[in-house]
Structures are given as C-alpha cells and as structure tokens.
Length: 302
Image (cartoon, rainbow, N blue to C red; front, side):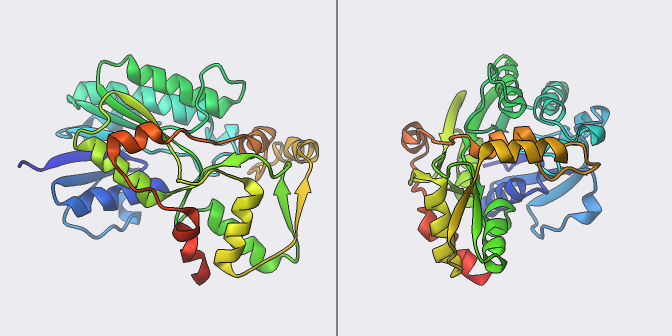
C-alpha cells in the first residue's frame, strides 16, 4: 500500500505532537509538520518531515501542502484559552481564520481530506468567542466539499500538557488549592494518545464526514478530577472554591496587561461543562478509552 502524506498544522504543539508520533508509528503514513520554525522542532522519525508554514501567511500554506493527501488542523494560539488581541492571538483569527486559510490552501493543493480538532462546546450560536469560532469553523469545513472528520475533545491531558500538569505542579507547592467556580462543572478528560489514535483511524477511513465528541470513559466534576490528580501526584491538599464573579473581576483587570494570564472569557471557558457523548465515537472507531486514574499515572513522576 502506498504511503500517505498527512500535513499537521499545529504539529509542534501538545496535541499535534501526539498525533504526529502516532501516525508516524503506523509506518503507512508520513507526517508533515507545518510550523513557523522547523529548525526548533525535534521529532526523530523517518516518517516525519517538516515544512515552514504559518496560518497568518496564507501564501505559505499551499506550497507546504503540495503533495499531501490529507491535513490535520490542531492549531492553538500561544496562551490558549486567554486571548491576546494585540498579538493576533484570538479565537476568531486562529480557530476560524486559520481553518478558512487552510481550506483554501488545501483546495489549491488538491488535498482531499480535512481533519479538524475542535472542542466539546463548539457552537456558532454561542456568546463565547472560542466556542463560536470553532462552531463557525466546523460549518466552513462541512460546506467545503472536502472529505472531513471533526473531533470535539473535552479536556485533553498527557505527559506534555499544560493544564493537568500545571495543576499537579501547583498542588506540590500550595498548602490549599483554589478551584475555579463551584467545582461542580462537568469534565471528561481524555488522554492525548487516545485522541491521536482516533485521528489516525480517521486518516485511514473511519468516521468519514462525521463529527465526534471525544472524552474519557469517566464523566466527573472538576472537584473529582482534582482528587484524581492529587492521588496520582501524591500531593493531597484541601480544596476551596473561587467565586466565578471574583474570577471575572480579576480577569477583566488582567485583560489590560500586555501579556494577560487570565480573561473573563477564559473564566467562562474553565467553568463551562465539557461533558461528551462518546457512544458514537466508540461505535465508529472501536477504541478503548483510558480511565483518568490510569492515564494520569504519569503525574507521580512530576
């Protein structure tokens, strides 16, 4: 069977790297990492190549996609989910605008298949800019005429992540830990390797022209997830809850900084429910999803 070439936009990021490693390991796929700085990326595999490209420079995309059979869009902006409009790091520009640019380049280069890493709460009618941008991007993909598969993951974690690993690190040094909001918001954390496995199966033909929610096998509250993280890391701390209104007030002030660490929209993002209906995913992809208590065992080494 002829080897497929699959371009991965955002292939140097946390989710993108996992997808690239998984595809390259199959032997039947050559992964082409699209990145602004190929010299700074190191993924040693004969089935991985690099191309200089930037979604902010559409002219760079068509050449980078030349000869590719499919593209995976796993792009996230720096500091996600806290936007920084002054630096062009917004959901509208990256999540929606990036998809529009990649679709145009894919059509120009003759790429037949588009895989999109969206989000569990994607909805073009949402008042949240991130959920709305992803929903608009999904519609653009459906209407593009290309073969597609869209994945809507809940919280994605793994050894190289920022969220769960940062929570574990904070627990190590904090005598008590502040949980955003009520702590009752629903999450369904999914191991990044499970998401990467689904993407690879989609490249091989599963889930054609479908949209699939991707979560772990366990639906839990944020508080329950924190207890799993504490057990896995060995750092057990009392939890308290930071009122959402207080977080929004702080976020409103932080937005004015040159490099904001929090925003009002980011507060909405972390306090929103991220439950998934994983039945269709399991039926189509036949994957055994990793329980959080098993998947987060890497935290014991942090």
